[in-house]
Length: 237
Image 1 (cartoon, one colour):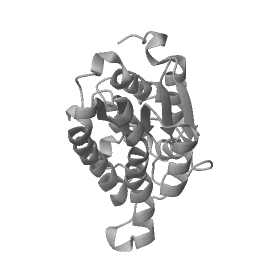
Image 2 (tube, rainbow, N blue to C red):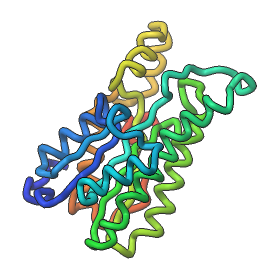
Image 3 (cartoon, rainbow, N blue to C red):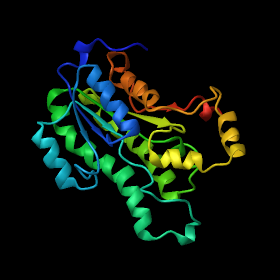
């Protein structure tokens, strides 16, 4: 779909997590271009796993009409056999990807209910619908749980005209971790990955931002609880 009329988000306040780079940054830039007042946060400003810090931030801006949960990732971890994974490694990935989403949604819901309007978009991963190429068990599990949380919140919040949807990105070269992951593959593995993507290319942050644009637009007012794969068609296989 095309761009929104800038006036449609001109009176909206948006929070986007994980804006230091990549997907979160692209989403924040898109919402700003559509007229929203965007407040971006990342791990150096607000820890999304710290409920007191998140609540204080949301209160300081007077709440939000739009929330996009993009913070997450693998926290610098690499794949290891399950029996080698520590409790701390598991919790670190689950906390930032799943618990952080819960904390941020909980913080913004009161104002959305009060105003009778809200748009929440959770950025999951293709790993949440299939398996993770990283081999990180906690990441695939947290991203799958994020999709389940999206459905449950859509069920709970729909009567307040609050929609909750999810995007499952494919392989997006959006940050140093994903770039290092891609460059670490042999040419043969890279070709195999690209051959499994019907459009024949990896994703960009802007591709995911375009999905968010739809979910916050008037065109999606009767769409909630959905997970949109933005992956060049990889989910077909």
